[in-house]
Image (tube, rainbow, N blue to C red; front, side, top):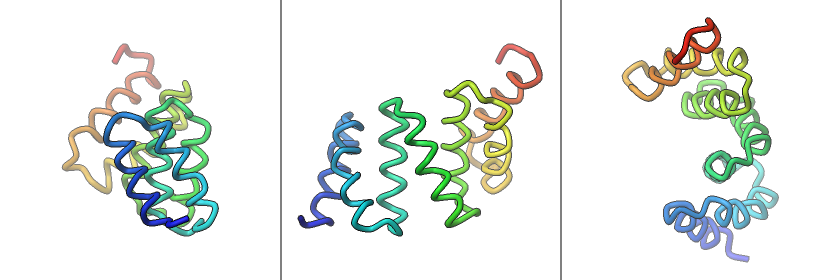
Length: 123
């Protein structure tokens, strides 16, 4: 198997709106190259987009364990935890992402939305 070609195919699947198909292509690649952060990030995004949230959480936690300064992984993990109905856990990751990249309006919007949920306000 040509891993680079499979990764490119997975990107095409993801970009064309088939995150489940992308994940199927990425799973054997990450098994062969577990330290490849680009593959792991696309796999996490594919899981997130296809509502395989437990799998997304697992991949995102691995990315953060390898690089705690990965603002995007913190943001997507926060969004994943929010979708899983765990806003208190999401808040920590969304705060970190927003602190690292305060210029991202979507980071701030997610943070405000989850803060409202945690504080009992309607977002």
